[in-house]
View (cartoon, rainbow, N blue to C red):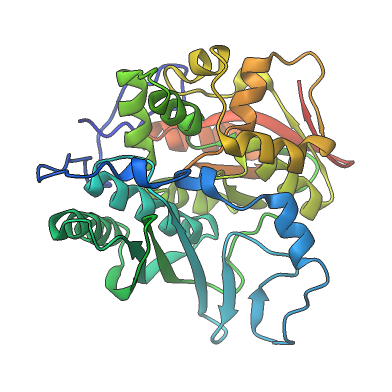
Length: 371
């Protein structure tokens, strides 16, 4: 399978200008006595706790005073950042979820990518990872070895080392990573620093939740699924490397809360208004067809409950709205940077063979408008 993560920013999604990058998606060839997805109530980032309920739970929680804690819960971001000295800071994150595919190696690689991408979303570089795992004892050792092995390969592709972990017995499988990386204490990216006049970009198309859920309902789109698998195993490393020289004002990754959920977080924490162009939203092959057929994940309704009160989307079709609320797994970066850098940024991504799509702008005000 080709790696579709290295694509240009034009309307076509055909591969172009191959460059060294993440490992190709390789199918697991061992025995599969149990379908992993049959053991999960929901999979991938669609299994996330409701963002609205998380806000309620954490409201009023004040972390201990710590001079060197640069990013914690006030406000929360994609990862915590702790300053070691004037030149070094640690980036720390963890992420895990139930299986969203039956192929154990693919599951391990997707879960690893999703966790590692939090470090890239902060502008950092991964150093070390530990597995967070919970599996039924009935699963064959070969299945577990495929999950761990694929995750270790993905950590190595990100520039880090998988150094161990912790595994529990649980009838619902869960896997992910705790990741430590580094970043300059004055060079990390935040979702709380977008500025009016910025242009907004996405570094991956949308639709993983729609495509995976459609397949579970018996509406498999083989081309779309292959594309989704490729994107979910594409690290955001190359996109972050291409972006770093442009000194973006704000960056976050688009995962379980969907584009509109993460755009709402960026707008609220930056105290700005995010304006998204519905016609410019990039969709994976078959994602809009799935939306038109009425496919919705469980995360769709939770994302609407969370972001919906802050979103204006009058006149936007139901299909595009479903795409914008769709929970993503290992999604791309949502980038906010001065509009006068936009043309050069697009050229840099195009020359690197990387996907980039301009999807909106930042204005004074509050909330999110999709039009």
